[in-house]
Length: 377
Image 1 (tube, rainbow, N blue to C red):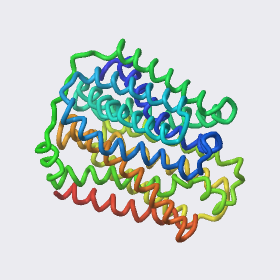
Image 2 (cartoon, rainbow, N blue to C red; image 1 turned 180 degrees about the horizontal axis):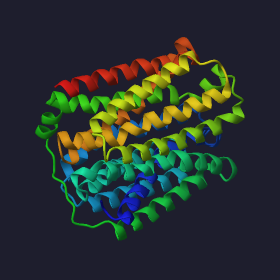
Image 3 (cartoon, helix red, strand yellow; image 1 turned 90 degrees about the horizontal axis):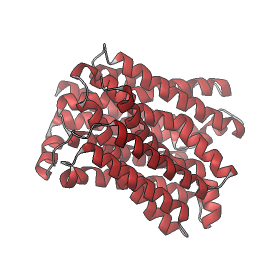
Image 4 (cartoon, helix red, strand yellow; image 1 turned 90 degrees about the vertical axis):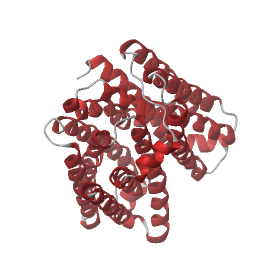
C-alpha cells in the first residue's frame, strides 16, 4: 500500500475536483441574482462541465497520456485554479460558462491520473483499497465541501467562494508535488486503442455499468430538494440536513468498499452495490411520507450508491490495465451525470416528483443488464 501521505494528497486532488464540479449546485440563487439569469441557466453549468469532461477525457489520453502522471495532476489542478478564479471574476454568464469548461479540462487530468497513480503504486491485492482511499476525497467533498460552499455563497458571496476554492486547488497542488513520487507514467493512446477498448464487449459493458449507475442516482438526486419537500412533506429547512446525511452515507459506503475489497472481488462489490441501490429506489416508491424515513433512506442510498465506484475502477483495471480505460470510465460517469439530470427534469415535468425514484430504478435495471453482459461476456 502506498504511504498514507501519498494517498491523502491524491485524495485532496479528488476533493478539489468534487467540490469545484458540484459547488455551483448550492450557489444557484446568488449566481442567478448577480448575473441576472434564470436558475435553469445556472443549472446548465453542471451540464457544461459534465459534457466537456466527457469529450476531453479520452482525447487527453491520445495527446498527453504519456506524460508523467504527477505532472498531469499538477497541470489539472492549475487549470482548476485558473477556472475557479476566472469564475469568481466573470463579468457575465458567457464568461462563467467558459470558465466552467476550463475547470472541466483540468478535472480530466485529475481524476483518472490520481486513480492510475494510486493503482500503479499498489500491489494488485491492495489496489481496490488504495483506489477507495483516493476516491474518498470525492465523497468527502459531498459531505463538507459542497455544503460549505453553499453556506459561503449565502453569507460571503459566490465570487468569494470561487476564490477560496482556487486557493484550495493551489494548496492541493503543492501537497501532491511534495508527496507523490514523480516516476509514474502512462502511455499515449490512439483511436485504435479506444476502438479496441470500446469494441471489447466485456470492457464496454463494464463502463456502461458506471455510466448508468451514475445516471440512476442523478435521476433522483438532481431534484432531490423538490422530491423531499413534495413527496415526503419535508420542511425546506430540512433539505440541507438530508444532503449532509447523504454525504455522510457516501463516505461510509466508500470506506466500507475499501475494506471489503481486501476480501471480496471488485466485480462482486459492483454487483452488490447495484442490487442495494435498486432496493433503495424501490423503497422510496413504497415508503410512507415520513420525513425521518426519507433521511434514513437517503443514508442507505448513499452507502449503496457510492460503494461500487472505486470497485468499478479496480474491476476495469483488471480487464484492461492503463490510463485510457480509467479516462473512458470517468467520461462515461459524467455522461451519466448529464443524462441522469436531464432524465430527472423530464420525469418531473411529465409525471411529477413522486416518479423520480421509478426513473432511477429503471436506469439501475439497465446498469444491471450491462453488468450481466460484462460477467457473461
